[in-house]
Length: 483
Picture 1 (cartoon, rainbow, N blue to C red):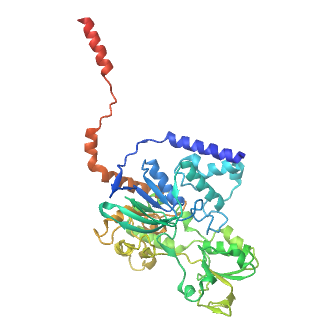
Picture 2 (cartoon, one colour):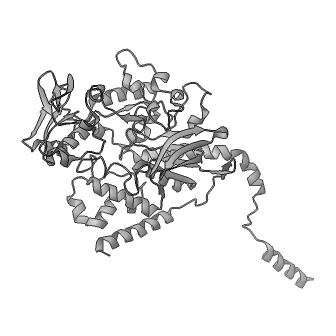
Picture 3 (tube, rainbow, N blue to C red):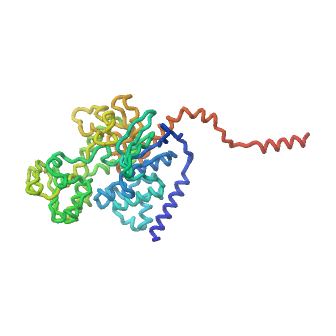
């Protein structure tokens, strides 16, 4: 065992001790439920990355233990950090906290210093994405949260009595899992899909393009000409990875200039992240319409990864007017040039369209959207924002028609689609605030559901704390002596 391995083991022991010190009240309190002879989970969490883990951890702290995490990734690969995330480091500052839920021994700093030393932390600028992945895996193992991997959720079926049947394919076999609540921690695209513009999908064969979230064989692009569409961080991450593999890369963006100010840094304060959801709808809409319109720049480090190559060029003010196969190559047309490429990478983000999600498609038309609840003043219209789901303060879906889908209150949307309603989700910065709100909503409902049985349970409670038998015996003896 290495010194670093011992240090991590000792840190895990310290973390468990700290959790044990604050484990009050320790009593499990949720009444078990069954349905048709089958056991019912209190909570099923779909998605085993950092968001799903944080929610599970928060529920365990509240002594809600009848939970199960379902993740489609193979064991050890939850989250994007070792798959399609292609940045070198996280975009957030190194002092970010969240999934540790305030337990210092579980923090990224404690983990990093145990593995690499305090001096390495002091010199660190930003956290390597692979280190973040390994940290999240260590955190999960230390807390003791089990995850069912290779589990693809295909449907959520509402049953009677408020029970939800989660249909999944697990290790190639179909399984039905019953739950009182379902939390969807399915990532940034978890309320829609990664977006491929029609001009791409209708003009090119599938083997000549990929989204930034797809698996890409970058080594196969060595010496090839590659076009990247989009000016967000992921577009530049993929451009940099292609350049580093030896490709010649052009990035195309509609915008006339790259933004230089990152609005995400402005919202990173406790007041906003905890209480944005308490604002009136008009204030939420006004803020988010401005926030989303600002866009965010690629990190300086990511842009510099590209700019250091003489084989890189950036074309701003260059929407794609035409795409076609031409003599075995991709002919790309903008208002300013026509050029030929061997491969196209699409970095155009994602759409919020719940009907595109198999787990939501059964009742997507019953989910209230912002356009169903709020009409913005003239000049502030946003068709994109209008399509986001209108959520409660605890991240629950709401009904488009009251009374038509009461089961929606038991489904929690822990994805980027929560942005307009709660001011944040799916990112590291908001983890602890999101987990708090979701856990509050779940425990509140679990408590209220069981409330009719509390008076009978109180009346039948018979755990004796005060025993007067010794006192009564001694008093009887004293009485005998006096007599």
